[in-house]
Length: 343
Image 1 (tube, rainbow, N blue to C red):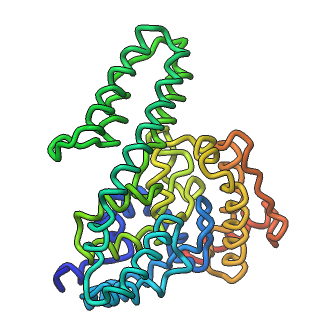
Image 2: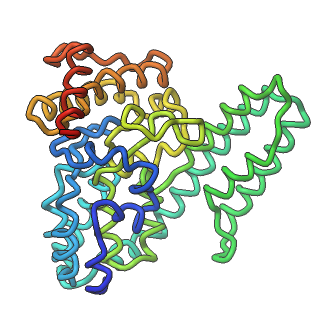
């Protein structure tokens, strides 16, 4: 990365620039959350890397030349890594022991062939699940979906480098099908199942295949970014979710990106510990409020508790027993803060 680009990196544009996750504009009301430290990701349970580490990381990344350089830099964030990233880091450590002066892209190239085969099997398994769900549809609707899954299988099995399977293309193609009124619920189940197609956030094999084409700098940055903070809509904006702090969570970038617009109950099926992680998250938020680090947002725990309960269909029930404010006292604290701001 050039020094010119480095100067323009901020905690606000970092994820958008590298990870296609909006960080400004629509999520600007989440700025108070982004400033917090020591927060547990409510989706994945790891401690989120604070945004104020971004510039320092980039300066050190610019100095990374060899595989050993990359491993040394990433070792500072090992405790923050998610499962896929942690698995890749273990592979990189072993590679650097034997080939310290090589680079991490060559490491991925060495194992790509086997990982590609495994990735194809992972993709096929999800498509099989989609096809099984079509049995609940009318023959006409089932045929429309199966024609798309069949095309996906053809692409997956093809050896052509010009005709590769794109998860996003398949998801978009499902939106083209208009189901009968009595089939909407089943059709939504099918779309939710399709969201489980492997990505570099959920599959080590997908990570290897994707990043074997990228430079060492991009590989190292990608592992780091996965655990940095991102503002997430509890109710997705596409489903009418408001751009207010009461609809926001501070999550890891990977947890945010992988959920996409997946309904929260479906995401919980994928990650059953989410209710437990949510309690850890709110306990961290409460600690930060008690330490004076979220002034003017003392009602946030009550708002997010209600929002999570509603969005999860009752699957997430947060306890605020550690909170020193009653709901009325929290509202008074917010009002007092706003009055001080006007004074």
